[in-house]
Length: 380
Ligand code: COA
Image 1 (spheres, rainbow, N blue to C red):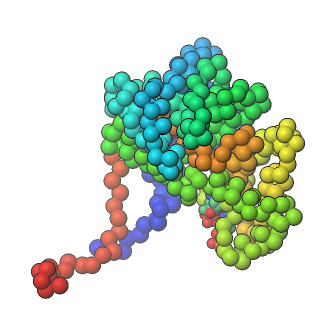
Image 2: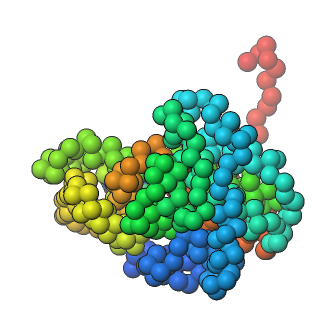
Image 3: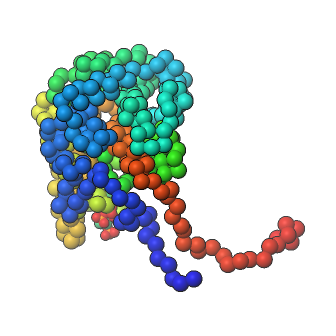
């Protein structure tokens, strides 16, 4: 056989056609169904973007009202699922819980599995609405607090904060949380989205496809970076320590978390938006601790890398963890928030996969031994 080549990690390999998300890494631009993320995040709610992703177009007013009321009607958790959260091993990570609940829902919720683009994913919106309730309830139970039933008069983001803190957030907090869900809802053919499409391509259910995608997102190379940014801030402790900390990290060849991106070679457009939210919240609470350290890291690390001829900018994870901390959210919930937001994107990809399905079946480049004579066990 002639010499074959392959791309490790399938980097840059085109694995499917898609009309959902376009990223221009050189210019730092991101579009969902042709609309720029900056415009979407400024004018839309998370529910509106979910509609855009699932139906391929922005909703008209009555369509959005109907969609929002459907999605909100699924927010509360049946007793069985609350029980499941209660009994989940206390040392388990909430991502494992989310994955289990997703699989459990598949048999618990009455639905018809139809393997077509008309699959009832667009009806069974509880997948999207209930995961934020699961995350908030998990956080409350582990602190010995009671379940807070959701409210259907609040946005997706505001309701999440309400269920978590048992207090209605003020409008700025609710709005910022909702926008953070938008900024995490979709991002092309990353590892978890690809996973969801691979599973969907076997004509498995959307529940199994999403639960597999959650497993992929759980890994710290994918969904867990913002948690580590927070650890980094705690380690640095003060703006004046940043320079020494960066120099030490570079010497030790440690990665600066939240900086750099495989696709963006400019500042991640989502980071630009979240940075503004962080500033807004820092002003509101008169607490610039996170903001000042992060901006100093961005400047110092950016300069050090520039000196080496590399341009490295913040990614979406750089500022998001600090925003969540100011909203009173503990780091253990950061990846579950990401996963809850991303379900709408995964569902859009699952539906698209089914429109023109072909089961994924790549090959590996075999590098093992040639045909080898068998040796009986007593002669080995
Ligand atoms: N800290 C230190 N060095 C970094 C860096 C970081 N955060 N990001 C990139 N670099 C270095 C790379 O190691 C590479 O060095 P080299 O030329 O000596 O091999 C160089 O800068 C160019 O990197 P680039 O090709 O632009 O990025 P990449 O594809 O190698 O890495 C990431 C992309 C995301 C894996 C990397 O930036 C990273 O690990 N970032 C921190 C983790 C993180 O925030 N992840 C969330 C991503 S959304």
